Length: 117
Image: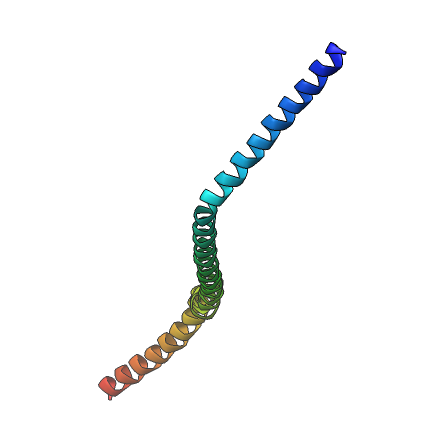
């Protein structure tokens, strides 16, 4: 009988401790309810800021992508003809200069003939 009484008393004490802990948690949650709301508000504000930062980052990345594309197009449109001209222009100039030299030779010959007369 004493054992069962002790057992019942122990169970009763455990239940009382459990009740007191539950009451402490309830009181703590009620006391901190406004803090939780403030934390939620802060988290919402941070979420809005991070979303705006994400949008700005997307715009910047898109701008950088277009900038790279236009730089490549500029290289192709402006620098490629210059490189091609440097490769193909010297032989063409040699031909033109050679033709002009032959014309200069004809002019010199004509001048010499005029001097002889």
